[in-house]
Length: 310
Length: 313
Image (tube, rainbow over all chains, first blue to last red; front, side):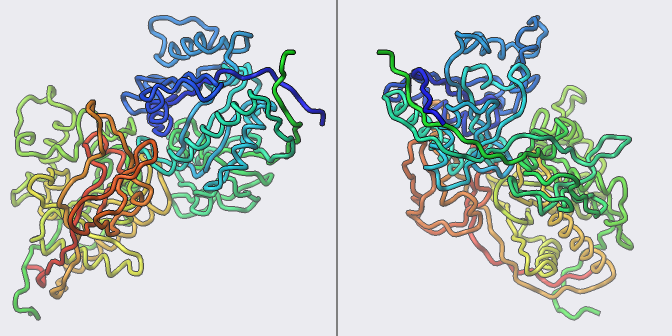
């Protein structure tokens, strides 16, 4: 593939507390603000606690999930006095770092998340642009303590609902497992390492390094699976099967157990063999998602360096 | 006829309750009690009335620990006798209602045994919580459970520390038993945790039936971990946490912590060491709900209690 060049990336926005009880990002951003971290070499850094009221309450959200408020439709709608807090916050963040889809949007936004699922270190993005792929490859080559994976949400940008879609290039760093409201040192350290490597890559990129292209595997979202529910009451009637629990990214084949009904029977996976992730994520019970399913793909991408104006 | 000279006598345990949802986001107990309220066959034993009960329904509805205050701290004498009705915090009202239904606390009418089902984000495995070192009935029941689940383990935590003990929901009963199983995130139901709790309740109820049928339980020793101190996170002048439980201590509930061992890690990677003078056994390490209670972990010391033989009166 032909070598690609990009303009420099002088600014990165680092967001924590988009969900107020996902503690690694909250504390990383708080620490960076306490230490007044505004630069990493040539890269300017803006840090923000996306949902300060939810952080204060140590809850995922106050009125509605902030990380579902960034679709084009929601961002262009009106904001009344009775609008949910998070929708107002989304408009503020879009004004500050967007507008989404415009030339004025910031170059890069990195949103920090935790999950109760055993997902190790996962980068999540909407579009597999070369910048995101190179940052992923860089992080993956250097982090050895946990598996590092790339997840692509196959949703067009106009319908992309999460905060990082506001920037020209955006991705989430998702680290788990960690319970809501808990700050684990090992999980914090992994997230910090991933963030430091991102900043390191940006500095090297801006100062003219060439990064070799290659191939990486990524997981593309195919669909969601809900819990078995009582048809009359809607109540959940099963628990994630012990053989699926904690086995995010382990291939799920037809006939493999997925749920254990409270009655004792096992529910099995039917259909295509796929990779489960976000298995038993706390916040997804109310979204009617027990786990999500992905296909594994291989991506080839070119070498990259910064485009220098002569 | 009694085989043991000093068998302690207790009345038959006829009225038993199993509480779930004392903390609304601790899902094993919520799920089990809801199942048993629909179909109680599994918890029925001859001669015992076992009532499953959701203690904090509003907190269960919102999947939060509590609404106004922690129900599991609410059963103080002041709260139980407070006037004010609807103006009282929700959990104080609930405490008074539960005290009416299952107590009154300290009276002969109180329920014989109450099991209160809890989860923790700490790696505590299965833990039985004892409120009095002199409750020989409970000591014998806990010994029975430990034997029944072997080689799986279940440890006993004793909290009768004058300053650190608290007025629990189950304390309205004559024999209160806390069952704490972890690690499990709040709001999440894990199959292994759910099954472990279910099995322990099964054995506990079997014990009660055997006791009621006249079985005599011989004297025994019971190893317990006795709560002795609470350790908070290091904080700055504004009360903000400045360090995290060290990776070497995280998940090491019940393992010895020796003087000099790593205890906390600051955000820039420095280690803070345990400065105590003797080896202790930490537990409730990094429990989510305890950040607001200023508790990173609890220090316990290993003790051996002697349980006298027991049989029914």
